[in-house]
Structures are given as C-alpha cells and as structure tokens.
Image (tube, rainbow, N blue to C red):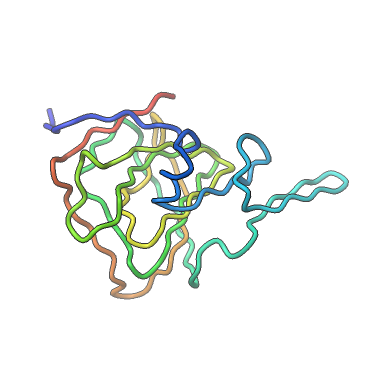
Length: 172
C-alpha cells in the first residue's frame, strides 16, 4: 500500500471565496446555470443558446490538448507550473478534479494545496506560475481539454511537493 503524508477532500471550485479564487486564476461559467462569473456573454435564438467569454480565453496563442486522467482517489506527488502561459482546464461531459497551490519560487507545500472540482460548463484559467496537478475524473477515468501555449522545450516545471505526497478524495 502506498504511503502518503496527508489526505484532502476536494471542494467545488464555485464554493471558494472570490478573493481566494482570484489568487489562482479566472473562473468562467459557460453553463448558463449557477453562479454568474460576470465575464461571459449570453445570447439565444430559435432553438439555440450560447455563452462565450468576453475576451480571449488565455492571453497568448494556445494549443488545445485532450487528456485522459485517472479517477479519484489519486495520489498527488508533484505539481507543475507555467511561467510563460496561462492554462485553461475544460471538463468534457464529466467533472474533473485537480490540485492548485500558490505561485512561488520554492517547491509547493502539501499544506497549501487545494483540491478542487470543476464541473462541465465551467472553465478555469490558471494564472501564470500557479502550481497545479493534472486533472482526474471523479471516481473514474475522465477526459478533459486544456488550452495553453505549448512549444518544443517550453519551460514547464514539475516539482515534488514539500510534505507530500497527498492523497486526494472527492465525493461523487
């Protein structure tokens, strides 16, 4: 059995106070339901409705990725950060769970990690430098999209966390 130093339960990203959320990134509600994040446009017509962001999703050119993440519970040993780009996390049909931690020069600390759940219809754009894990499904493997500026030898940093690894659980 794998050893980990602590366990954390994931929280709904929409339950984080706005000032906490702004520390890590920008939340977009494209679902037309739930809390209004104030940074989208909505329109509708005969047989359709649409919601889009007020501006570009990230502030650089972007590469769209499609990743398969294992399900919860998962053990998080390391986090990554990008100083050259923002990164958007985009659930595809199923909620995803990932860890975030404050930007900083040193290794991320397990005590500072917040596991969050992001539901379909929402997009979370991580600020440059925000530490984050890969995304995972809730109880099962799940695919998700991400959008970031990716190029050969780009300066992404993966770092083992201090006080880890961390076991992450999430209620279905």
